[in-house]
Length: 100
Image (cartoon, rainbow, N blue to C red; front, top):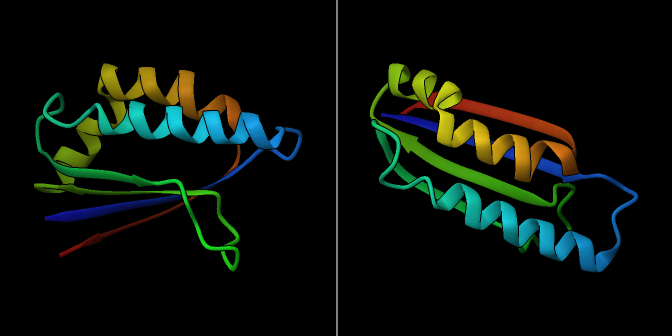
């Protein structure tokens, strides 16, 4: 099994209301991939960090193996969510992948 963890910071120019809506859209979009991508075991997005955090949201996902993670990266359903709901609104992305 492989864990795929992503931390994002949203763009500074986004208003509080926009940030709230964007985080909700990212969560709904990514979590909707459950059952659509072969090898994706679990996917969860946390959009309510504590004030001590320096990231705005986190993706926590689990894949059957490294190959499934590679396929996820290019899967059309994932790319659609990333291109429409994530990338336009984020300024930084930090990734950690590891085997469990």
